[in-house]
Length: 170
Image (cartoon, rainbow, N blue to C red):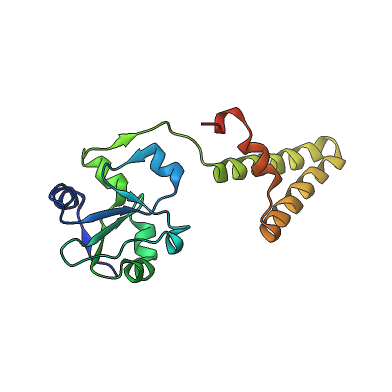
């Protein structure tokens, strides 16, 4: 388990150049709220991110949104650091609550959450519609089959459709 460091202490050490702050949140999270000076290495790809090893004079402090991901992945992060490493208590949320400097971007709902919302709404629509017109139940079956296919194949048609929507263009 990585030792814990407070957001205020993290800021002091970051300003003094005594640590490297590595944010393991996904890009959409970082775009919405970013700690200036933090390196970004999303947890989903951190094993392939070629993270520069930690050094005794400049250990790595890992952070996520609330501290849960860094706690759960503590062993992996410690191994990837290759030297001294800590985790920031409470994550970027605690940093922002403390009133420490942040950069804010436009808040967007992640594509993954959009897929969850869309698929869930279609399933509910199919179930509710089946009360009026029984064949509508096939909409729920179609969405369920699509989700199973996406999980097995890695191809998600709903994801491609949503990614082409104007609100998902930069």
